[in-house]
Length: 202
Image (cartoon, rainbow, N blue to C red; front, side, top):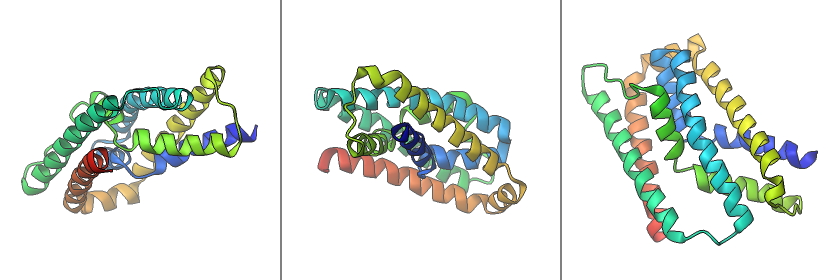
């Protein structure tokens, strides 16, 4: 029972660790409302679920996955985050209200699938739990582990959307939207650069 409680806790830690999705939820909900935020996280859960499957498989199969796969994923994710960062800068410099996320559900899928924190954070958090409990993790554990981890992801993201929609929070965000847009642009590009550096020089 303790093992699975830690799995749930790890899911919350993963979601609340600041990253592209975390930042995007606050930006989108502030401007377009909670409904759009729920659309974004609905899409992001598809990408996150795929990463969760990949993470669990890599834990079970250890080093059997080809390294080139991670390099390709890193390049694609870094390119997408670089594009997001540039869009944020365009928004800051333009007098027009440029909507970065015009299709929240589709954009959520892309963010979830290309989130650079997905694999390293998931693999480190969940591997630590498995090793700490001395758990002999096999494919038989996959279904319950997957369900519990994904459930914690969904609950945590719903909480994030709710928080972002609180009036004082959204009011503060809107008042300083240009600063936040610029800051998010820097962070997205930073995530992109960090991902490429870790991939080729880490």
